[in-house]
Amino acid sequence: MTSTVESGPVPAIDAESARRAYELDRKHVFHSWSAQDLLDPMVITAAQGSYVWDGDGNKYLDFTSQLVNTNIGHQHPAVVSAIAAQATKLCTIAPSYANDARSEAARLISARTPGELDKIFFTNGGADANEHAVRMARLHTGRHKVLSAYRSYHGGTHLAVNLTGDPRRWASDSGSTGTIHFFPPYLYRSAFHASTPEEESERALAHLEQLISLEGPSTIAALILESIPGTAGIYMAPPGYFEGVRELCTRFGIVLIADEVMAGFGRTGKWFAVEHFNVVPDLLTFAKGVNSGYVPLGGVAINPEIAATFGQRAYPGGLTYSGHPLAAAAAVATLNAMEDERMVEHAAALGETVIGPALDGFAERHRSVGEVRGVGVFWAIELVRNRETREPLAPYGGSSQEMNQLVAACKSRGLLPFTNFNRIHVVPPCNTSVADTKAGLAILDEVLDIADGFAD
Ligand code: PLP
Image 1 (cartoon, helix red, strand yellow):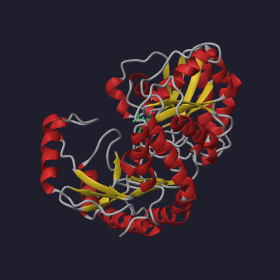
Image 2 (cartoon, helix red, strand yellow):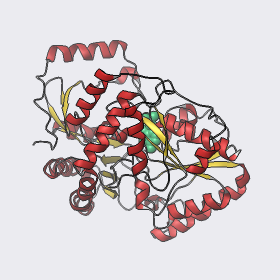
Image 3 (cartoon, helix red, strand yellow):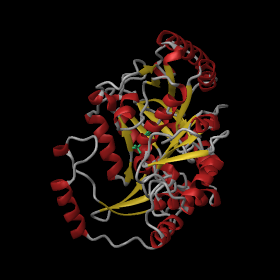
Image 4 (cartoon, helix red, strand yellow):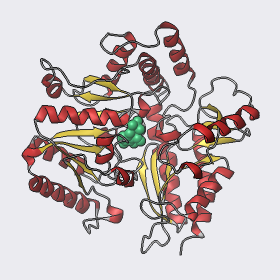
């Protein structure tokens, strides 16, 4: 199997240095979201395109894009050399100065964002982008409350994790005042007893409208929504839902923030996932795919009205590394490479002609598959013990022996899978070749045979 991105020979694996990396990690590194003593991290020694290698030289097809960020795959040569060239020229400069890499990154991003979201505030990642978007919305409206959906993720910082609507919030739910959650549409497990996408859309909007009126529209600054929720489960909004949310926000003077941290920059087969709907948000947050995560970068794209609020009045917020030149240069090279190599179109075609049809086939053949859903290179396979009861193969907020076995089965076949609770997500880089995508799907097909053994 070969990946589409060839960028020179893969370095020889140094087993001794891999062993030392593991030992030092276990001794000194404190990992995210984990019980430290239970960890057994794989050492990654090399990566190219859609592949990574472990410390023993085993090769894996990366169907995770790491944390769904390497949209152009690993070690894209144009981006690696742009970072090196920028490092030689100017590694860092304070945000108050103008800088060519930052200016060009802002131009390229604003050229792709919908509507007139033409001013870019750069952050270090997605959580702080959402924190700043909410701060802007609060100052712009003079209101405080923020609405967000259950089954969402908005980041690990205090406000962002309180806005989050999945179990990652639970331990830190110490109260960021004014964060209120609503039920988003999710027909497979409908909170509204709906039986069609249209019914789900209509009822979810009625619920949201009622929640807004009960909370008091004049108290609500913003509503934040992942354009297509990611780690929380990849849910395409049913017809009319996103447009209905836009209408409610406009009617009640609420700032609509589209969180495109995971769904943006080609992942869904469009530059931004909001383009699947007829919607322009007031603020759009991004990170990850903007430069494939080669150097940390995030940001907020701002509409003219909100930007004007801070025309004569200082915006009270900033970061030492806002628009860091190395990160900005990586973004410029990433966006140009995506355009030149037509990666967004490729991601759309992979979804339509390869991944979508294969997953539909899984749903027909495998009794453990409850539902498949997605678009582009952004798909979820929801696994159940029983198709009638829809009992998930792992509890909400937890894992199970069975899911762990499926992960191990993927890895032993050379596939890195992305799993969350009872779901396997198919989220390879946007430029994964058709052959590699099919090879990964063939492995998943085999692994689902094992999953079928867990289902009635
Ligand atoms: N928003 C969404 C939709 C995300 O998927 C993530 C991260 O996975 C974040 C925000 C937080 O981004 P970061 O981890 O860069 O802070």
